[in-house]
Image (cartoon, rainbow over all chains, first blue to last red; front, side):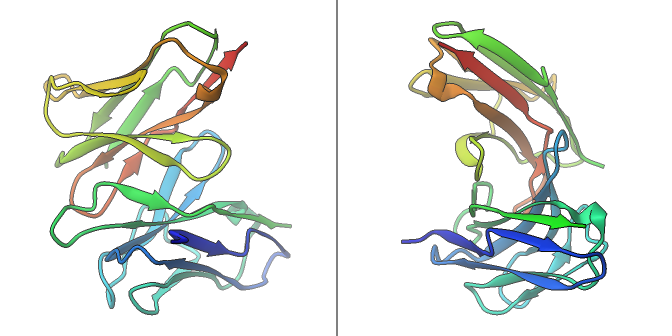
Length: 115
Length: 110
């Protein structure tokens, strides 16, 4: 079991470029999440998907879009990257059916630099 | 807006010392409090607490929640260099979301 995988691991973008971060899970979890982590700020929720076919904004959604492609995959898109989006991005999953999704399981992260 | 505050921001101890980390919170609808350990990569789950006064233990780590005073502590006894990490506290107001604190960086020196 790979758990939660993310691609790419590292990316450098120029201001204004676009890109999509990919996340896939083989844990059969219903919920999926995208966070960003900046120094001294902990993890901040960008978007989440409680189940296939639904997405909701988190704490810091501006500048991002998401797609829940199927139960396994949840992608995060930056349409026009800005230096303020330089961060480490984590995807996470959680169970919902039969048990609340309190525990979340994290992927290895994508380190994004926007110049 | 949900708020999770951890203290101290960082600390340095020597092997064998005991460490106490604090997490206070304000949320509109509390469901649970979680602790994670992060060692330069993905956070890994440590504990989930939902009831006041019940200690959760795992080896040298333990945690307790006080829902009346809205805080939790995480204790690490007989620290080892492998305990060096960022410890994150998170609060869940519902079935889906977690609100994280900024974390406490623990450095254990040999």
